[in-house]
Figure 1 (cartoon, rainbow over the protein chains, first blue to last red):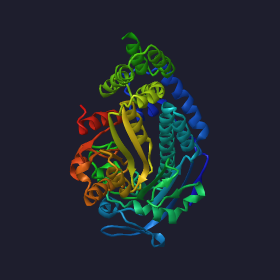
Figure 2 (spheres, rainbow over the protein chains, first blue to last red):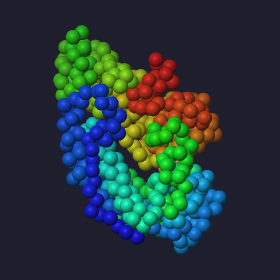
Figure 3 (cartoon, rainbow over the protein chains, first blue to last red):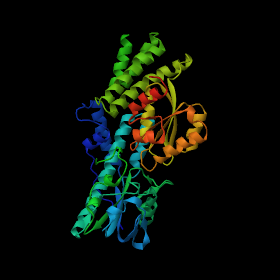
Figure 4 (cartoon, one colour):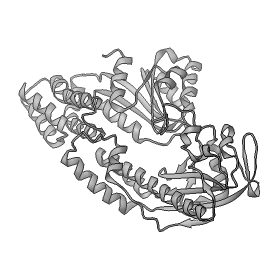
Length: 226
Length: 211
């Protein structure tokens, strides 16, 4: 298991604006521009990016689950098909810590609504940035070993039970990077992401495409495929 | 009246200090409190809401307007209570059980308040019994949010809880959240669905027959 700490988070203003629903045709008020500048700077000050990952061999894939080394089982249910030909599963957790979330709550309580919402979006962009950096780090390493790497999937996606966050917790012990699970298997801090990727020499092409392809939530706001 | 138009304009611009000042001036001039509210503050919020729907402004503009509206309301609220003016409607809002994400729900609350609703914030991770309790207490509209597909099923569980408690007919239920859709609302038997905070106001008014 590896812990990554020196992660250079990148927060693009355009991405923050996109998350806030900004369309390029809408002129930005100078006050909103000012708040964006301040909160992006504040975001960089508050983020505490950390990540961890581990690579486990795949022992068996049956109709509803993936059995890993040490007999850990991922209950992916109806989504096992794309995992066939996986030789390993890499499980990763990323977070930006809780300081930014605390500041968002303070801003809300102070009535600084725009600042709160902008900083929250900065946090979302920051944790996605950690997620991307870790994924690409893993991708490069696996590619060097001659493996294909799948797109990212996570418990809660499609029919994959969110309860498997508990399995990930047992495998990775996320307290080491400050992540805990609540009773509903949600990660705290909220700005945390877990993901799994399959690696293998003959990975199924379906596994390399967007995870939205195996998720039945056709109207989801985050959906990236038709 | 010119000052009321000015208040509305400043709400649109998000000028909360000016709105506060102008609202106080309007009160000092003896203008009817309800007129200041309707033709000044609410009128300004309505303009912003319409612009939001046409994609002419985005969320931070709505929030700036809401903040400006709030600064005016701080002056009007005690006077509205004195004169016995009622909110246009009441709604209890909460993120469903298991869901701890409150930003979206808070935004809906802010915009609904801006539109003249009394909002009872039930918080996050709200168990079905708490929603049912609000209905039993006479709140006519219940809003439920869920950010994740994994917590979304609690919306259906809550609707079943209203039915089991015999209060389903007493309330209208509106749902929202990133993964929620009109199709899902129809599927679970919710009365309304709103994709964003501004639409939530329109939908709340429709469900309470205010529009």
